[in-house]
Image (cartoon, rainbow over all chains, first blue to last red; front, side):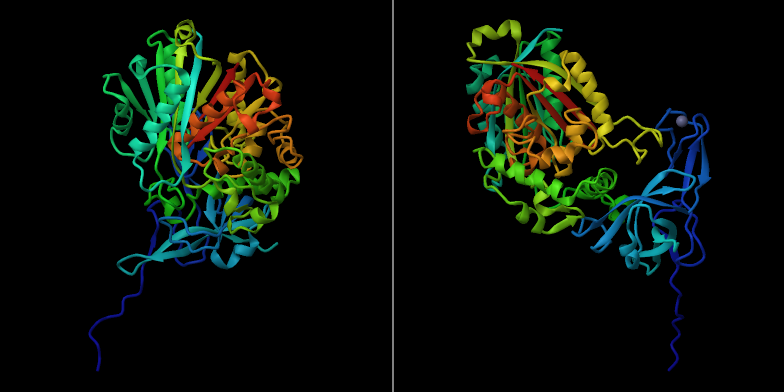
Length: 146
Length: 382
Ligand SMILES: [Zn+2]
């Protein structure tokens, strides 16, 4: 018997609107959207209204490179409150090739590649599902094979 | 500014006291500090209270237990640095000549488990990035890569801390532990294991301060002078100016501590080489190593080795956290700072008993207490 309920393909939604350039598909590069101070040149992610370095309010939106190098890392092994990440997972501090230093997590299957000096790409990854069945996407680091 | 002295200090033992109220904890610490100082409560002109998790007006609810004298009771919050912030405000109010005597109080009752350090709905929280031990672990990994330190060197901080805690009747943990036990305890965030994390704690602390010119009438047996201080909230550092993170990290970054401790030393007219005993914020084991360096007690990159060689033990040449520190004395966040002052008071007055450093001849004490949002440095002289 045919069902008259049409299957709806789950939609991809970013964890936060305007946080990164949302690609069409999962696992594609996800460039972070931040800003840069017109007065002193310092760049920020997440974007700021006033520059942390010089307090200028003249900020311009910028899209950073999605690639960088792991500056440091750790493996979290205890469940933190309010997080959807399931331990063990890796937190990495990434120095973006053209922008600020940002913290994110490694994609789950790449946890073994969390090491200082590793080249990584920030990619769109499934973080969780929301109440409407949408795939909530965030940026996570994946190793770039050398 | 007038000279200000500490006349007395007291604690409620740190630990887990589910059947005691904040009033029970605070009253005992205040009573102990007042008795220690010889100052009767009606002589106290103002109270500054460091507390974090308690609700509205908690400071007054506790201080008024001692009597309703109508004095101003000021609630102060700077996370884990709250009661050194309370101390600083009390100090400035007496040094400025507005009040002659002031009471500093810290108290806290905590839930078990990881402290939530970011709003639950922030993207950092949801992505599992707002994890306190992880922020120390990230710095620790970088430190190991830069200076060739080992996980055992961080673990040794906890061994040393428990050794000191075993000599402190007010400590939450009064039992020694071995390097093997610390290393074998559950991994929380590599390289930090469970026994390298400060526990959740209930406790209270209190300190009585007075203008030096008015202190004689209390016939205090002994006192120590507030010699220097500095407070900051984490100045932004541009990329490439040393702090790899860019964002100012006042709690784990040693460069902000470097800047502030220079201010404090200058005010006190001393240098790090003059310090006899130190209390630092070891919420997690790497804290002692990073801060020993930030405070200039050892050169950059040599903190881990200093711990490993026993130099920061009670018997060492740069004794740190002689009461067990946050790791063993416990860390009831609002009460920690004034407990640090209490231990420095015991050390500089020669009343630290089995924990006494330098044969009771310690003259200069140093405190570093940090919380999300800021750092307090205090220098005391006998
Ligand atoms: Zn700027």
